[in-house]
Length: 268
Image (cartoon, rainbow, N blue to C red):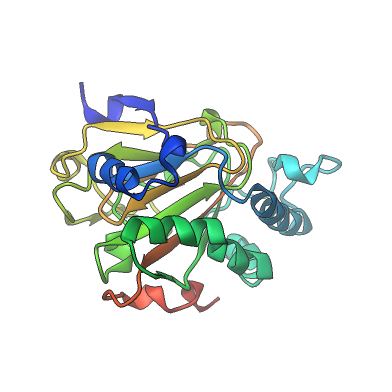
């Protein structure tokens, strides 16, 4: 059976959240740590509202619907990163105070510090994503974050869904064990409008990953993974639900960092 056909439930690390040794062991084995419902839920839902109020203002949402349902009207777009209409909304989001406050929440900072055993640096470039239905070809391909961030390999991403994200809405999936053989060279997919570098075929197999892991996410969930861990978005297969998420990056203070660690998001 090909790797792409094997999908299983995440290994949950809730029981070990305060045990640094167990967290490091699980991270070394799987390349990720998944926590169910432990994140700062109130802030997460607050940022969800920020995203969706701007989406509503732009005319993306169904008139009369509850803004927090993220119900697309089926007429605007679908848009993706790189589209002018998407960037006009995104510029407003990245300049909202909560977009920059959430990544520095003590839960996230202390979690990473527990893992690295030292003070932590938060990268300034925070990334938010809005994934439209009926836009499957723009689904983020399998890749390793180190391709984009460089610097120390021991950089960790925390991916957070902004609200409940059932499987059909298209959350994150992670390739278990794919960090074990380091960084692999990526190739550009010309179909992708933005951030289209990825791995497939022999290059994907060479990472050592053996099974995709994911879940039906709930508010407050988060996935932490190493910069060499292969991950990908799942397609948004719904008719009308926009999927919202953020990913933020952290590393040990004093380690080498790449250019994207200290710049704001594409200078928006």
